[in-house]
Length: 228
Length: 408
Image 1: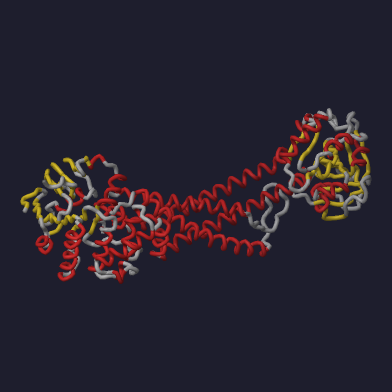
Image 2: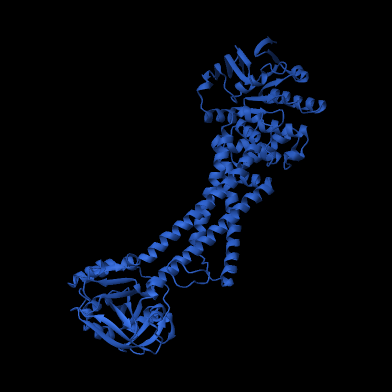
């Protein structure tokens, strides 16, 4: 018997206005996502994969439908509670890395731990270990603007793992990386998934990511058209 | 990583903009501190001038005298002066008690008569406690407490054509309503700061006034000077109680209750400088709000990231407010240095200011150092920058996260 899903969305819809047009980003889809998964949401641009990732990551709210977190209605959570969930249970990796420019690599990794109230010594030790784990221990005091794209994404992954999340949401994590670096980053994520049991949910149309996925959900026009 | 540490890094991140914002605070604070010092000094000078110019810290008289209900000279005078003085002097805060006779009449040089406002006092006590003697610009002060002589305001002397050493005839009315006159020597001429008073001022000794008014031992009131550090507002109720306990039905008024001119000038100046201060705060607020709005707009995506990874909106706002407070603090420190420098320059310049309302002569500019005005400036700037930072930060922290993350 498999473990109950951490996230379960039912009938999720989301519509955006684009000038005079209404774009249906999510057209009433159902999805569940559990612990330890390594899942890719794939599809062409505008298929709704980033919107779905944002809704599942509690960065956005659906227009209708329900999203349950551990069986409880996540829609009932206020902004403060949603922020707490994102801080303590989720991690995020963005296409453009989104590191805080005034903080060094180690301080970027420490930041979520400081928000969670962890002590300085613990934060420093864990940040160093995480940076070593993603292969850039020697860059801990370097600010993001002096790091390469691959190094920045490694820092972003270390930051995403700072509070030992159950799920890391990664939106096009390889889009700004060269082919070789992208491969390294994906191998790293897969290793973290296998070694630490961290679940990864990607939104991408990069075939290299799709190749490494254990589960692939294909979206088109806001609906799931294939699962494999 | 505390909010303050992060805010400090962000302040240093865009040095030019931070310097511009802090620069606005520097000039705003310096203007506030200098204006505050100048106004406070003006109030202090006016207060001191009022007290030592003749009003004293307190005045004791019959209630009818204060009410201005006297129809005849000394109608409500104090006859038992010695007893009242003894009661007043028993209070440890009292430094001096100066009896006064107030009277009105005509001053004549034989050809021309001009109305005057007269005051009779003990010139020795007066010279010790008041600054009237220092106002003598021609001739001399009284040579003895019983000299039959007068000191005239320069305006009155001009009107009657008298100069020091001349003999003039002083007309007055006795309590019975009889016209009386004495010949008196003009000992000296005094330049009083208030023009209207300068044009009517006549001072003489108590014996001379008593002789003119044909009264013995009766005075209009007693002026009380307090020891340094004593407050008139504290001493007044004590003296009232002491006089009442001694069976003397006299009223006691503080200089603040009597100095209408001081109160009017204070209200006028407070209004002018209050308005200027408000304009200053608004200018600083708008200028700083503009730069903080730009800073918040430029960091929209960063704010989106911070919120995505779990930073509560309140913490985002606190970060921006902390940036504003750091800039305010740095600006105030530099502003204080600038204010002290400008203050030294102004005080050394000996620039003469025009006479204040009702005064007959100007004074050299002097900007005092009042720590309270610097503290008020600091509080005003901290509050202004906090407000200037809070509202742009609040707006930025309310942008939906996905919208903020997509911001270019």
